Amino acid sequence: MTNQDLFLYTDCLNDNFDKIYVLYYSRMHRFAKEYVLSNEDAENIVQDVFLLLWERRKVLDIRISLVSYLFSLVKNKCLDYLRRKVVAEEYKKELLLKLSALEDLNYTLSSEDDVEQIVENAINKLPERCRLIFIKSRIEGKKYKEIAEELDLSINTVENQMSIALKKLRVELKDFLPLLLFLLNS
Image (tube, rainbow, N blue to C red):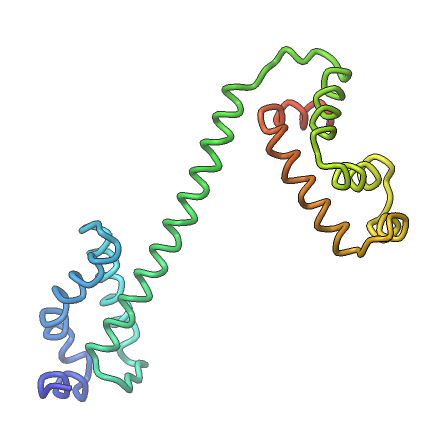
């Protein structure tokens, strides 16, 4: 810890906030920008950190150097920002897939027989054991335990096979999903 850090660290934040801001803002900003890339986002993160420091100045009990404390706050704010960004990107991808599915949706399905044929074709494309377990569960209405006993499998195997079946059907029926949901729920 430098003498300057000790001076700022031991004095009241209230009296030295301007000094702290001037001394550390640019370092914190460069640090944040390294991770969030955007100048504006880095500024917002650092501003949030200093706002937090100001708002909690009377209750803070900093037991490390002030610069370490500030870098830790900025690091955590950057992590929060990046996590939110990842979630937003995933949501955006999901919306784009739904948009694409709606744009490609084929409205030529005119009857429940068409829907049944599409679902039946998708089920028939499943691997044999997967298909058998899916049919026993979803069409015959059997519980996983019953299926496991009947096929001499563990319940875990039945659950895994159902998970595989549902994933494969979701992919196979993705272009028809909105219409299928509408027709099956009406």
